[in-house]
Length: 303
Image (cartoon, rainbow, N blue to C red; front, side, top):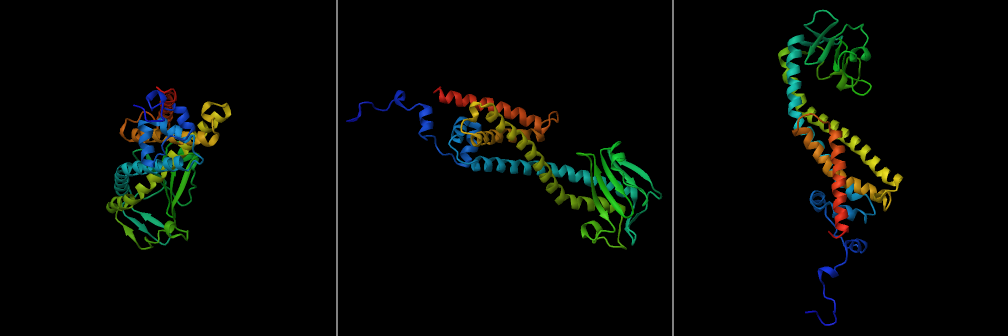
């Protein structure tokens, strides 16, 4: 029975339509945890709430938080394998060169007796070069992808990478302790059979840090480029997603990028290496957009 003064008691047919709810601000305010769960279960509520956003702070913080966790996941899960590889390389190099000594002139080793000499370990190139030889990255990278260039006064790590990269590891003339190896002064010696254990000890803390930074920057740059592109496109094409301006479009894309970022990260670690991170992220992002906006359309239609 209807209450006095209420001739139209609430019924399902009398409830405000979804678009009216949206205009009246009737959508609930979601916490970070509810937003994250919502992106998997009810993305329409998360995306519609983004239309009321006056700042990109919440979606940006959520995306950056997930990005940081994905970077940690990649770095920490890949680190044990890298530590093992570094240790095996140290064992091999110690067996190849014998005792490593520090003299007043720089470094000395037992083998090879004469330079130049080139040896390889699983595709990794090591050149023992005379002091008068010139380091030529272009010539080295034309045959191999990465390696070490060892002279008595300098040790250089190089890789083909983007336009080629060379990193000085030891310089007898440098005043920096990290480059001059102050902890390995003249008169010091390291037996070849201890080089592997020393390499493992350094890699145990350096490998996770390096991998977290490397994968974190790689993922961030790739995702940021793609999100900026998809934020600009609706505004330039005046699509329906551009309603509310670039801020709304950016909020929506940041929210829509969370699940694909997780999917691409997990795929990179557990699936066979057939597709790279960017490919998986792009396809997952496009698929998520189609699914999420279909949910929005059904919600607004009252289905």
